[in-house]
Amino acid sequence: MNPFDDLIPILTRRDLTQAQREALVDLVVWAMYVDGTIKHEENEQLDAVIRQLSTAAPIPLDRYLYTAIATIRDAWHDPARSERILAHIDTRLATPEIRHTAYALCQAVTQADGELATTEASFLERVRRQFGLENT
Image (cartoon, rainbow, N blue to C red; front, side, top):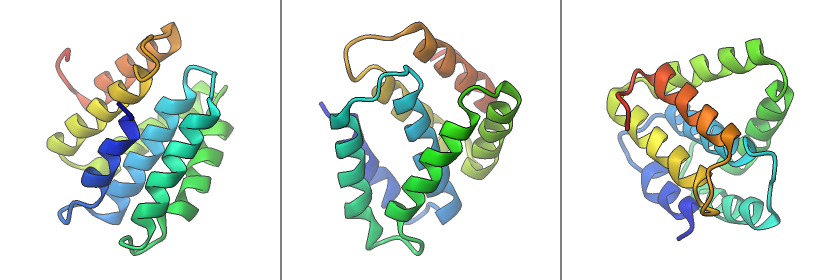
């Protein structure tokens, strides 16, 4: 199953703000890149989902995707900056329910290839702690 397929029903929810949508995109991009092996198929799948969503969002999400990629790449090897970015994502998500949804998306993306690398497990733990989630 393509974990990016879950993005469409989530990102098109009417109760989400643009800031929440963008925070979800940031987090999914981060989850995709965290293992250090970015597959062309992953990029294509994410691009396709974002293109489908762009017509419904006040700010086109396809343009925001490139901002998210640049933000995550800039913070890749800077622990202090990555902590600030994760805290900012947490703040923008705003509700426990959307944080749970975001975490579930991260789990799906990191486990999409059938393996959970050490970097992916560490990332999931950081997200879980930042979001104040119980062990899930």
